[in-house]
Every structure is written in C-alpha cells, then in structure tokens.
Amino acid sequence: MAKTHYGTSYWLDRFPSSRRPSYPRHRGDLQTEVAVIGGGAVGCATAYVLAAAGIDVALFEQGRLAHTQAGRATGIVLHEPEPFFYKLAKQHGVRDARHIYQIARRGSLEYVSALKRLRIECGLQIRNAIHFSGTPDGILELQREYSARREAGIGAASVKGTPLLRLLGANGFGLITRGNATVDPYRATIGLARAAVARGAKFFEQSAVTRIRPRRRTVDIKTDGGVVTASKVVVATGYPIDDFKPLRRRFSRHDGYVV
Image 1 (cartoon, one colour):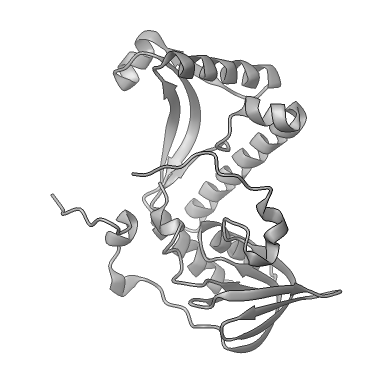
Image 2 (cartoon, rainbow, N blue to C red):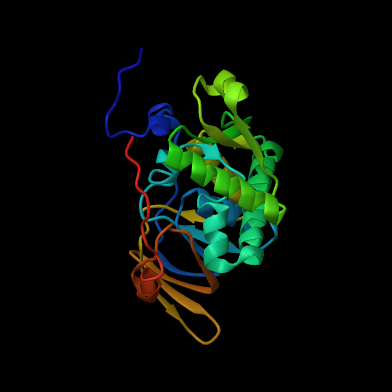
C-alpha cells in the first residue's frame, strides 16, 4: 500500500511532476477581449468555452495551474447545487430555485460532455449519487427535500428500507440523483486548459492579479508583471477578491469539511 503523504493533494501525488504543464509568467502589456482570473476548474472551463467560440481570451493564475482548489477537489460531479432545494425556494422563491437547479444540471452535463468530446483522460465514470441520513432529524430533512422537489416538478427518487440496506448496508432514508460522475479533477482541469490553448487562449502562471479597475469601455488589470487591457473580466477565484470587497457581505460560510 502506498504511503500517505499528508498535506499533499491525492490527485497531484498520482501525477508525475515531470508531466505537469507549465505556462509562462505574464510580462509587459497585453490586450485581450476577455481576461479570466483564476486557473482552477471553472477558470479553465471558461477559457476553453470562450476560445472555442473564437473569442480572444487570456487566463491568469497566481500560482500553478490547478494546484489549489481543482487539485484538491473531491472529483465528484453532481447535477445539483449543494444547498437543498427547499432552502433555496425559501430564500429565492420556487421559480428561481427551480431555475438554479436546472442551470446546475445543464452545466454539469455539458462539462461531462466536453470531457468526453475532447477525449480528456481523467478517469471519468458515470455514477448515481445517494444523499443519505440515518438520524431522525436527517431523515425528516431529506423527506422534506424530497417533497419540495416533487412539488416543484424536479426529478427526485427516494430509497429506504430493504433497497437502501442492500445499497449501503444501513437503515434510513436517501435521495438518488442519477447520471452523476467522478473524475480526476486535476487531469480534467489541465485537459481543458490544453484544449483552450489549442484554440488560441493564452495562459499565464505565477501571475497574481493585484488590481482591477473598470473604465468606460474597458477593464484595466494589473498583474505582478504588467498591465492587461480587456473588454470583459471573469473572476473565477471561488471567492471575492480585494477589488470586490462589497461582495464579501453577500458570502457566508455555512459548512466546512476536513478529510
């Protein structure tokens, strides 16, 4: 059995360092139609979609590509957002909550489809997912979620009793979503980056963005090594950066996971 390397990404540990892609630092002045900030799963997927559409795009990553969130992700691709539907419906209304779920499903399906179409070797496997609880409070919440989805016309399947016992070896209640997937998130992300570059995208590593300033028709972006002028900017960092301090009050941490 391989020795556990604490503090090291499981996915990066399985990928030879000699084969990891390397991109240049950004230096000097650059003009582009769209600038993408963040070289994780979302940033690389965004860059690929834009480049495939014939849009001039440049991506900037402050460290190494896919070494942070993407390189340490679970590798699970779900067709639904993490918050329960009934909670989103309470906060935004049933119509908007349904729209959020539909967008999430369409996005994950298109992501999986792109990995297949581009023949990115990332261990892609299609799997069903079970959201399960064996505690009384957890069962009641899942039953509430099941009812809310059914009433809103969102596909939902439940499992309990003997079928659940056969699947998990445990009693309780579960919700099943079908056609989800598992991937090696690092391989999937660098595969999309490679496909984006092949379509003309420019990628820069170790090029931290230090300032974003909107102008009347353009956006000025300052990096460690120069200045970028873009028509649009996509912030794909997963958290609001310093230039978007007003957004911070709209983000609140609800759950944390340590594995």
